[in-house]
Image (tube, rainbow, N blue to C red; front, top):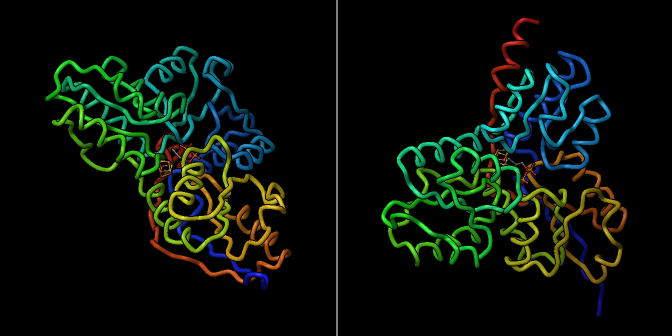
Amino acid sequence: MSAPTKRVLLAKPRGYCAGVDRAVITVEKALETYGPPVYVRKEIVHNRHVVETLRERGAVFVDEADEVPEGALVVFSAHGVSPAVHEQAAARNLRTIDATCPLVTKVHFEAKRFAKEDYDILLIGHEGHEEVEGTAGEAPEHVQLVDKAEDVDKVVVRDPSKVIWLSQTTLSVDETMERVDQLRQRFPDLQNPPSDDICYATQNRQVAVKAMAPSCDLVLVVGSQNSSNSKRLVEVALLAGARASHLVDFAHEVQEEWLAGVGTVGVTSGASVPDNLVMDLLAWLAERGYGDVDEVTTADERIAFALPPELRKELKKS
Ligand code: 0CN
Ligand code: SF4
């Protein structure tokens, strides 16, 4: 048998979304404006390289606001925080910059609004993920988390005609719709969110990986293990027909044996991944004969978000 033709398909869109770009710039500008240390509650975004780079520049990552010295500056991560965290910060007189992505904030508003209208809210998301902790924290007595299929049977509602589902922004679209179908079998009047909670970036990256996966022997996704949207890209690639798929933080993590007998390698990256890491991977692949790269484009993203108002005000002064 002759060796397969080696080539790379490169998904577009991939990498940084508008919310991640804004959150990373927020920490960089805070460091420039106020000087280190700038405290950051949780990882600003779920990417090892980004976190390590900001740490080298003077960002101090903490798990909770009570680890920040009284009166110091703390940035809240892109994944959002519950009102209880804002209260903790206020109790310690912390200066805060909120880098929550506006698309996460939108889901917080939905949770608040439907809680006020006394709905039971079924929040589809991953247990323990910071974003669902923040969203659920807006209305803990109205929200029930639905993660796995078996969670659907555990849901208890007060009035089946007044139930709505909301979701984490970084889920698999297809898996979420399966969960909604299951929930609707139990609660036929289940209402949909007013607009998609799974954000544009998550959706677009899944559409792009689906377009290339059937042609790929291997799909490499650049992203960190704690990045929900990056992990979903591996699952989506496999379900869409890729023969194999792996998540790697860095090119050097790719194992040579993954390339055995591989012709077409698909490459993409999660929404928290800087594109230089993808370029490093392409260079690594080129050294192994995969130098021919074709981009597979399924959407053109132009969205950008303004920096948090607390920071904009400060930047205006300087
Ligand atoms: O990788 P991320 O930091 O977060 P998750 O995919 O784990 O939610 O990407 C940015 C997403 C947000 C909010
Ligand atoms: Fe915002 Fe979506 Fe990016 Fe998360 S993945 S930061 S919700 S745009």
